[in-house]
Structure formats: C-alpha cells, structure tokens
Image 1 (cartoon, helix red, strand yellow):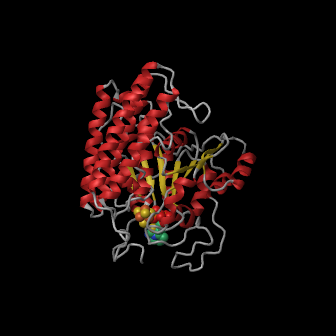
Image 2: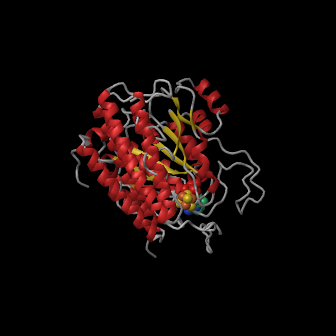
Image 3: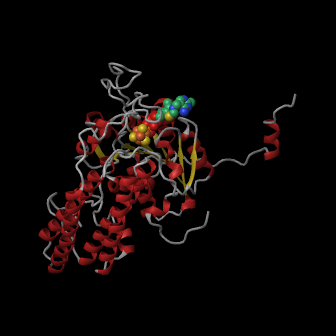
Length: 280
Length: 176
Ligand SMILES: Cc1ncc(C[n+]2csc(CCOP(=O)(O)OP(=O)(O)O)c2C)c(N)n1
Ligand code: SF4
C-alpha cells in the first residue's frame, strides 16, 4: 500500500469493488459514513483496519481500501482485539450485523465491552439475518411474523444491545441511522476518538426481508439529551428509550485496556514445529 | 452554520455558503454514481444509465459552484463545522428510496424531490441571513436549483408512468 501524504476524500477510501447489496439496503449509507469519518480524521489508508464477521453487512471490508479481514461468523471482535493489542498504532474498526454480533458473537460482544480495548464496533442492525434469507435475529421484535422459521413471531424479548453494552462496560455508546450518513459519520468520528471500546448501533434497513424498515428514516429522532458519563443516568435513559433515539448516549471515563504483549519465548520455527501435521 | 432555535439557519459568509453548496453538489454526484453502480449490479441498465447521467449533471453543478468561488478543500474539511450533518438538507436521494426494479420515472421523481429540497435549503438560508452578500448568493444558488427542477419536470413529463405492479418480481429474492 502506498503511503499517503495528503488528506483523502471519502471516495478514496473505497476499494472500487461494487457492493452486491440490494439497492435500498441501509449498509450503503453506513459504508459512506465510514469513508467520511476516515476522511475527516485525515487517516491514511494504511493506518486503518476493518474487521468483520459474516453476513451482508460483514462484506464491508471488501468495499474499503484499508486493511481488512472478513473473519469467521461471530468472531470479528476477538480477532480485532488481538490485532489492536499487537498493533496499537492502527485504528481498528469492527463491523457486522446483529446476527453476527449478538447471536453467535453475543458472548464476545459482552467480553469485548468488559475488556475495553480501544476499538470501534459498528453494528448494522436490521433485526434480521439478511444473508441467509430472512430469519429472526436477537433484536427482532417478538411479533414479527414474516420469518419462515418463526411463524407467529419469536414470542421472546428482543436483545437490548445498548443496555447490555452499558452493563458490560463499553466506554462509548451511540445509536445512529443509516438514513443520515453525515450524522452517522460524525458519531463514528467521535467513537474512534473516544478511548476504549466504542459501540455504535446503526439502524440499517434490510429492504428485502424487512421492507417496512424503509420507514425507519421517518421514525428516528435525535435523543433529547446530552451524552452522560454517569452509568446510572445512562441506564435509565437506555431502558426508557423508544429504540429510535439517535446520538451519543453514554461517554464513559474508564481507561482502555492496553496490555503490552511480551516477547514470545518461542520463535516461529518452534511454533511451526508444534503445529506440524504428522505424516502417516 | 447553526440553528439557534431549531428554526433558524444562519450562514455567516459567502465562503461558508459556497463550501456548503459544494458539499451538497459533491454528495449528490457521489450518490448518483453509487446508485448507477447499484442498478448496474442488479441488471437494471436503463436506470443505471439515467443515474450516471444525473451524476454527470451534478459534476457540472460542482464546477459551477467552483466558478463562483467554491473551494474543494474548505468544503471537504469543514462539513461538520458548517453543520452539514443535518438530515433533510441533502440534494442526494436517500439510499432507502431505490428499488432494483425501479423505472426511469421513479429515478427522475427521486431526483426532483432532492432538487426541491435543495431549493428550500437555499431559500431558507437567504431568509435567515442578514448579510447582504450571503442573501444575494443564496438567491442565486436557489435560482440555479430551480432551473434544475424545471429540467427534471420536463423529463418527467415525457416518461411513462409505471404500472401499479412495477415491483412484482416473478422470481422474488424474498422467497427462500
Ligand atoms: C458458523 C456459522 N453459522 C451460521 C452461518 C450462516 N450465516 C451466515 S450469515 C448469518 C447471519 C447474518 O445476519 P447478520 O449478522 O444480522 O447480517 P446481515 O446479513 O443481516 O447483514 C448466518 C446465520 C455461518 N456462515 N457460519
Ligand atoms: S438481504 Fe437485506 S441486509 Fe442483505 S443486502 Fe439485501 S437488503 Fe441488505
């Protein structure tokens, strides 16, 4: 990768690969917000890594011209944590969907919040598994009846990602809407700048399996409050929130976890030896 | 720019206004390019071509604002400072408003809505400012946007209106 010397325009962070997302998908807006945020921060492409899991939303690293890794389903966070600890100089973003982050990756989500490594986690929440053709996800409302695997609805309480993030120790909590790419970009800038684990939930419609979500842009509204650093106030705020408030809702003061890895005792050759497959 | 009481929209100088106008036109040009790519990807070449044409037209508008003194760097660097992060100001169609089976009529209607939004924005800026130069420049920019609206209205008049079942797909993606 060439080393950049001047500020790049948002477009210059795109890889040139054309997204295969359905026209109308909210993830287009999120892609655009990420490129704007990187441009505003004046980051060079080689200073950024985007790590994702599996899902439509998790394809995002392919569309960006920064370092990227399309990881295993639900495992983006541990991978990104390892990367950040090994390369603290990098700005590490983690991106994916609600299925990737809160179902199969739910446990990693909690512990990443708790660990408070300096990462920015962007979840494109469409309350459905888009890539596998429309199954209910942890954030799906209990009465959503259009999922073939859950006729009559799931009937169970949706997962509350912002509340869980707060309870688990995330240091920055925000909600955005993909329908407002500039506002979302601004929040991503703040999330990146805030030390520790930043969690940004972006309401990002799946127009194919949840066409009613096209209306989200008319439902979202800025939270009528300033960000707080008081977890008790934030908890009250998040528990009474109507799920469409946008903005930065919590700004924690915890110091990030920045362990310095010790030099490995073993060299690469010793490790290779350990992993050698025995020939039969 | 700031909104002191959620109603007012105050732009302090023509430089600020032109930076804003540049940002608006750039966002629209980029959005149309993206929408053209989306349509090409989903085998809708007719609408892809139309969005490419709209991107080209927006490119010319960028140049017009540049000729009036708009500065690329300033526009890029100060999007937030100028309060450009406000939903509803944009001249770009919303991402959610497109569909893979959409027809040229839909595309032009979207563009028309976006241009009308831009007219209202510049009119509002003119109404809120007390700086004569800003008022004059806002009037000029609003008039340019009105000309774009007229052009698009003419296009729309000659395009066939889509049938009611335009979005019906005999092999829909949503059927597992
Ligand atoms: C281990 C494993 N289990 C299941 C899957 C199937 N799978 C692929 S994507 C996905 C869920 C995607 O949903 P989400 O993360 O919300 O992303 P979206 O497609 O909606 O953006 C599932 C279950 C898989 N790829 N790997
Ligand atoms: S299936 Fe849904 S989430 Fe996936 S690209 Fe299409 S609209 Fe987006």
